[in-house]
Length: 43
Image (cartoon, rainbow, N blue to C red):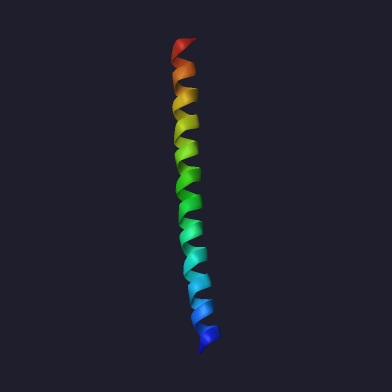
């Protein structure tokens, strides 16, 4: 029973870490996209 609880906790932790990582990556991509667009309008 303890092993099942630990496995479940690790699965949930990995899902949360994956979601946070994807969110951070998408924020970085949005920032880079804005930077490229701003650079394009200036030239």
